[in-house]
Length: 286
Image (cartoon, rainbow, N blue to C red):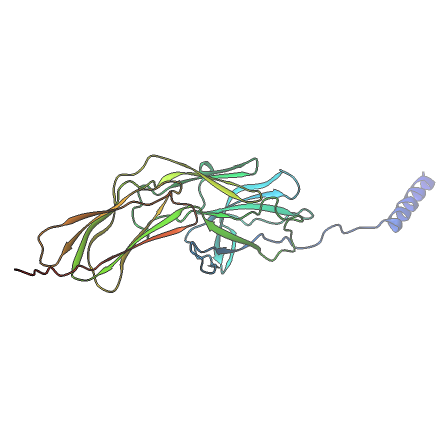
């Protein structure tokens, strides 16, 4: 029995002397972050995104349709880099990722991704001033658009957010005139938009029913300084713009209607400049 134990101990010592440990992965997990900029709705240069709230992110393993995560909210709560809002999201160890991005973030029922198309619900039907409205945005072509994807060596993913709606502005200048009741007669402020990632990226809207009249300006006494108001609207629609004007010294409020020549396109800012300069009434009696 003693010989048996001696041999077993020797075998254990020999095995330990030949054992080796290989470190497969020893890096600290890297959090996924985005460097977001908002493309201008005019031809001005893009600027850092200063959105209130969050943006939604769908992530896929590069070269596949495997979802890494879906519709997670990110916010810029760490300076100018957007990171996961409710929990930190980390890069995979070896794979790259592609992303589809939109803003503002909607709940799980508010956005979905299927067959290369991101669909988002949009509703500004109860937000009737430009300050209250949501500026619906989408990330431009980051799903299966980068041959290598983005990986854990990416400091922050650069993503340009573009405008999914149209913006309508009415601007008045003039003298000796008061403008009242400036309204869009039936704008569409609710619907859903589908962003299909390809070459090119396309945005298609399914509008809901039009709102009733939406007031932009109640009363404005015209001067050389423009009186203006704006509204974000569902594109691929249009509506007339109506107002009344009253010239100083007159008791009459006279109506005027602006009829857009074509449907409003997404990512485009339409400005209707109205200048009212009345001519003095003169008589030449004979």
